[in-house]
Length: 191
Ligand code: IMP
Ligand code: MG
View: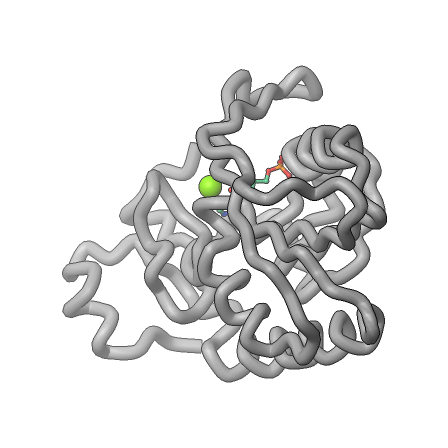
């Protein structure tokens, strides 16, 4: 799929954005399906949705508008260090405002790759004794998984290709793209 012309006004001519992998309509349709499924599963219960900043901001804001149940919304901001290997640590930059004990929690991620981040967060949140804890990720990359964890809701399964847009960044750019794209590797060096 080729890129919308307006993108060149946004990113410049030496555009690092490659091919569109999921366009706006495809994402909207899938997010609506996930919203319906989650609403059905949690019918009669009140949900606490926790988005992981920054990557899951865009997905979370679209997803909550598709949920047809009462909910509370909170965010946790994290940064990762020791990026290589299973010893990866996650630092909490902003903790939750809500007390999650006894509540039904839905953790929302942009992409589960190695699974180390989500695994760490699930451990951390479980220790706070929620009534239940589920994980929803827009993208799932099972090929590179190091930590096994149950993914309750998945938008799309993706390959190894590095992706940007719809919250996903490359060096903190491109989160604002309304679609998900690959990188243009002739303009960018992906580490
Ligand atoms: P994990 O701990 O390896 O599962 O890391 C997942 C995190 O890495 C995501 O929340 C993203 O911030 C980042 N990440 C992994 N793959 C990509 C990608 O293809 N594009 C952008 N960010 C990615
Ligand atoms: Mg990121």
